[in-house]
Image (tube, rainbow, N blue to C red; front, side, top):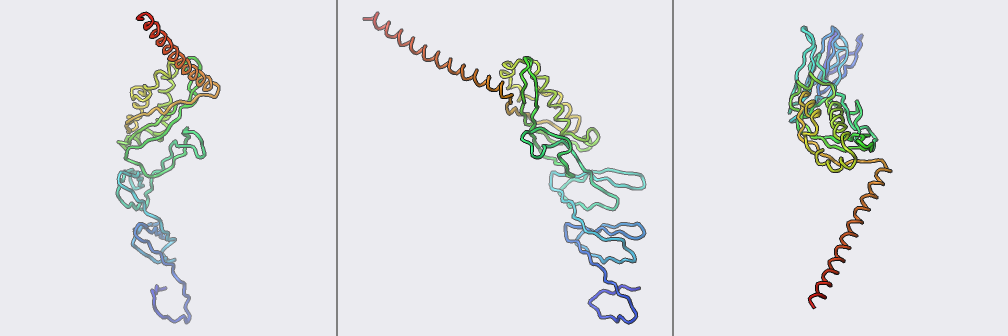
Length: 277
């Protein structure tokens, strides 16, 4: 059998002709060529090849991984010495070699179609790590004060990945670790205070010193917590209604006191003038 590449005119007399499929990879693509003897080649674009059924099992085209600046991927490779791991930083167009694959991360993330910022396992799936400062919302639900008021504490966490190797060696879900550690810190902070005491100390929820477990766990995972922002709290409707009524009564009493003080001052002024006359 012979391979004839056109354009060309050939005689079919006594011959069986089979067309060969042509595969083309443009820049940003690559071809995966699988041979009948078990070998595999990856041809980064621009490249092309013909599917020769005598030698090839299949030829497929895949997109290369575009890694931007401040991004990185974790690559595993299987060789004679076993499986090895390396980190590839961008900017780069990465074409995996035969026997290489990318780490698939599956972390806590925002639940789809949810109305709150509660994180659920496995909601965030990706291959590229972001080496820039990042942030996330986190609601700590059902936190009970010392006088049994149930609250939802709303936070915003600012963090940055500083050491990929440490992260890979110490955790499989750093966001889940942050959620658990921040929740523990908030429960510890709120549980020691009454509802009124909590309202008077909410400014401390903006202080990193209030989150020792969060900052320690982040450091163990190769991350740095830059800041925690307290976004307010939520309460059950009955408690919120009582709180609103108490606030209204407090404002009303303050206004009545100011009005009475002005009336007393006016009366004192009239008496002073009567004495002067």
